[in-house]
Image (cartoon, rainbow, N blue to C red; front, side, top):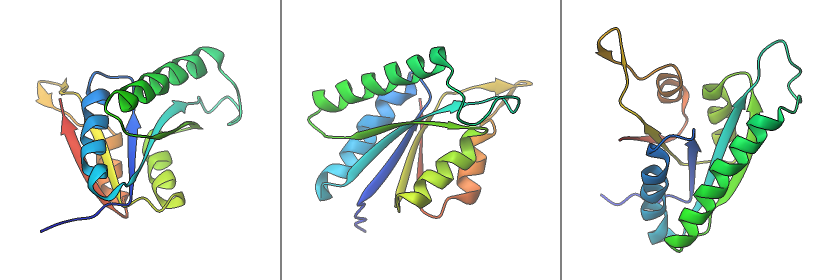
Amino acid sequence: MSVAFQKILVPVAGTTADEETLKLACVLARPNKAKVRVIYVIILNRSLPIDAEIESEIKKGEEILSRMEKLAAEIDYEIETDLLQAREVGPSIIDEAADYDIDLIVMGIKYKQRLGQFNLGNVVPYVLKNAHCKVILYQQ
């Protein structure tokens, strides 16, 4: 079964899983020359206005996206990047996927435990439950 993707969304969080996730997205995108959109979401505390500019977080996000652009250039694939601000990551990923008519979300996750059990956190289950498109998880 062949699946052709036209638009792929890659949310990154500054973890070591980001690089492999981007590589996977580019491999999946290459056969059809799909667009790959990489986003980093800055989480804003509810006490701040949604358009507040937190320089340290903006700098961190820009550095992460810059690393992703360099990696994409190394593997000879053009990507677009965007820095978003939101109250929560999950809904912002879903909104971005809907706004850009994304047909695949590729997310990287680190292995983490909570109370001795493997834990996906809050973002991944939210995306899996609410995504209107296919989702691929890459566990490092």
